[in-house]
Length: 316
Length: 95
Image (cartoon, rainbow over all chains, first blue to last red; front, top):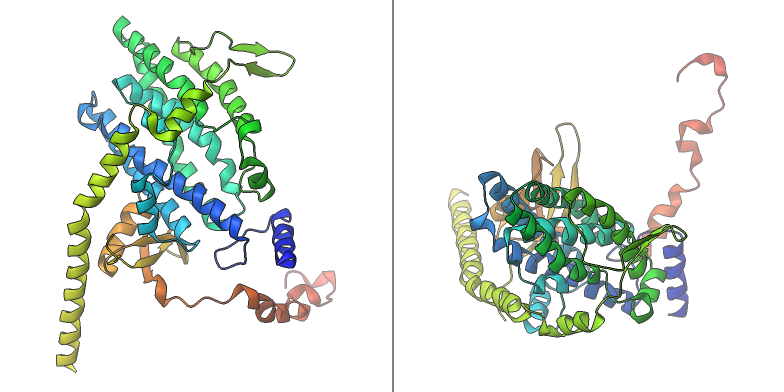
């Protein structure tokens, strides 16, 4: 066992990818199942706050883009569920964990999308933070996860760009539209920063995940990178980030930023965010109401198989 | 929870004519026809392919990684199977 673990770590250190049938420590498998399924659930639950605005998109162009984006999120969920299943867990088990609340998904999706400007901010900040997290995952040590992330990242960039375009349009609009834009940024900025997870000193998984090269950067490193990028991008929108402590630090070569309200973060993780109940309930309902479709498809496939078998037997 | 799950299918996409089909991932579907339809939506939303293969995962036999050495090591010491093994003068041009 000791020997196997050493060989495994040597492979990781040599940047050799781990594939489904390779030997791996049980904790590595468990960590990946937790992380990949959480990621898959986030894609699927993430369709809900945006689906909310499809019928109310302000133009056909916006509606097309939003539909395509939400369809992409479904696709991303499917790539990730498939990657997760290579670790020996079934799709049904994964869905059950989501429906019972045993598995988590990104807390950001427990916030409501109140105005059209939220569609823009979700694209810019939420997808932006997701991209920041996901790009290093393309080099993750587990092959199927890394490959799924390459596909996801390719598609995700359109999401962020369409979001920023929505915001640019609002920033050149009426006073009411400009206020709507600023209000959306104010509500989403801090939750977006929380998407990178707890601060490094409180993150119980980071150290081991870095050693296994599942993660390449710590939560705080990625968060800083995100702040640096957004602090510049917000200027083009003639808007501000809701942080009085945000300030360029010449010495560090980074923006300093204010303290995150971790109490809020943990409350939302524990299920007490504004939309936690609604989101899980919507997923449960969709699953229950889709049961007859899953059964009917199996019955239909079986009937077709039998009909074909009979036809082959008769022609023989 | 129902146990009547749709089987898993492995999906292969030919990105354009002249190239091999390449494995891109997997998905669940009730039968082959549905696997093709779902693969179209999941794996080729952006012109990634001109042709799809779907194979039910249970029909794929894979080599065992722990036997990898026994399978592939014999090729290691057969350098004479590569063109660079042979000493030829520069003057012969491309060969």
